[in-house]
Length: 282
Image (tube, rainbow, N blue to C red; front, side, top):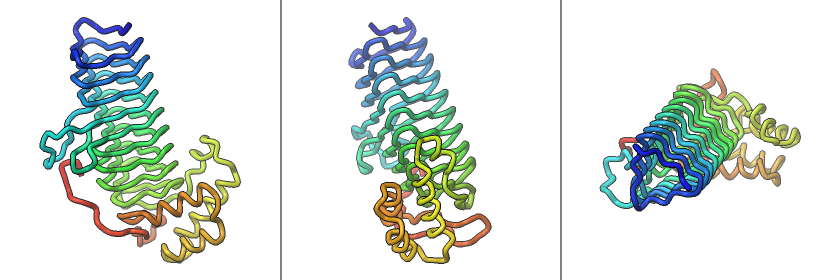
């Protein structure tokens, strides 16, 4: 049986799992599905169509599944899908997708979204990520598993953040952030691989050494991006982390940040141009 406070408003069409707790003055709208063992804090609001997995914890005044902040959105049916064991802290906001953007926003499992963090329409966030206070994604952003988005950082629409990336506080990211790398600044630069994060997540010393060598070739060798990719593939290819890094760079539409601190030339390769149309969540 769910435990629903008498002042909470739960639509009759909502599907509430076993052992779900819904706090005072919370609102669960139509076409919302909440998995077993989840907690909905007082004053939190969830609008549908939204599906939430098991054992999620939604703190007071978090807002999930609201209409996208996009002037082109015209009321078409779109969705928000959330995995398991996520924590959404106070005043966090996650919006549904848009019709032209695929109609779907997705959140994986075991993520932490701190106070006032925001995920805009049509974003796709992996698992085990951390969004620090007021970290913000514009629309159509992709974030890989195990990434960290620092406090007050903003990620421009159509931009990507790679697996195990660390985005420092107050960063303004308008190009793709390299996986496994620390990217920091209002004019972002790369500060080496995310050694501490990789070690904590169990990435082997050998893999970290390969990634460090690949990072040096990509950012500090004087090679252009195409040359660096070829060199990395020849010398270090055939390993999962390296192959993912190479694919990530080669498929970048906006280019990757690969400048070092104090150096010019942040623009990197793979860029096929175009950032898409601007919208209110850009």
